[in-house]
Image (tube, rainbow, N blue to C red):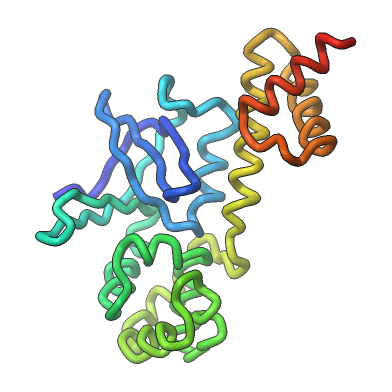
Length: 220
């Protein structure tokens, strides 16, 4: 049973959402609840994380899941132990498994727990993939059991995380780092990438943005 991992951030993948942790040369894929993404992305910084070179080190409390129906182990990571404890309670609700919970938790644990204790169906219904019936099941199952989590001093994130915007920001940062690695000033590289994206919003990948900027430099 894996309960904690400490290693270097090797890769971020918002589509999971997941990160890869390099622990003494062994890579672990760890699913990451959406509400933690801004914090982890800030820890990762703006360096290129392409899986080849490990980035900053991070410690994560791990929820480990494997079953007969799901023989491939699933690892879910949290920055704080009480967040993992809440996750265990959250997936005890009928119809909510680890993968669904990871994507549903786009606001902080304290925000979700308060909504449960206050029977705030509107907030719970807005969680991705939950809906009105799911909100009622969550309240019926967990009300009175998450009082401590409702008072948790966590990120306090009440506004849903916008995964699309975060992914876009990461692409811009990686493209700027790629250009800076070619010898251009980092500040100029960031500005050029942002200008290229503003001029042509269809540029969605690191490669497209990098090529657009370099072509622009060649034409000057």
